[in-house]
Image 1 (tube, rainbow, N blue to C red):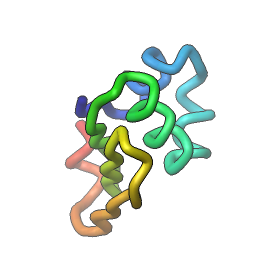
Image 2: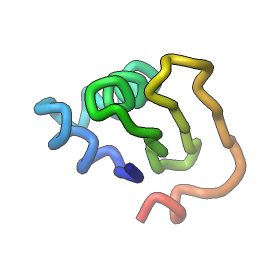
Image 3: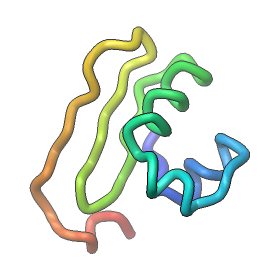
Image 4: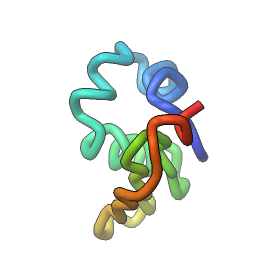
Length: 67
């Protein structure tokens, strides 16, 4: 799954502001809930696997990559 914060919020049943404020826990919850690898788009991209392993962080790029 490759959601941006708005799509992640819809999948989690929460507000976009919550996802943006808690990106790490949000990407982990999505991966666990859906049993899928999740790439949460943003100026810092987060990637989480459903097995609960370490979340990968890609700090390169710009906010334009989130659109």
